[in-house]
Length: 147
Image 1: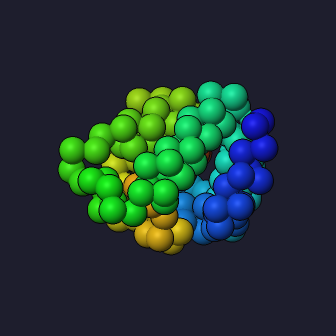
Image 2: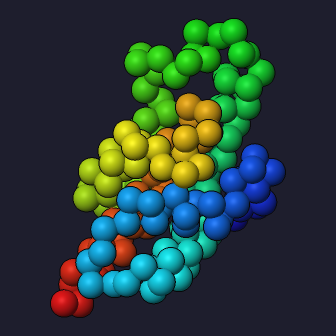
């Protein structure tokens, strides 16, 4: 949807990097790491096909280009505390995919910024963290329901 996976790749964000970042904070819930990698990759691929997730990710890409990359000397260049729209986008993505629980998972990824999240700008780090959080939260919920 919206060629979002291709657009992320153009920004240096491959799906494999997203999965690897997710696995850095993975908490086993009856699913081994190898199986979790496959299931997370599948969930991320499915989420990227959702028009709501894709449009929020596209919004983050465009905002990052316009407000961060093109304006290095702007007041948001260092992701200031008063900039909340990036967090809101990340939380929205997480909740669209994984529901309310995903908001708490988003906080873990947003604070620790594992893997590729550590090198992204203020909008994309939160948007991708939301993608990861929604998918991992959903995986955890499904694994707990099957036990």
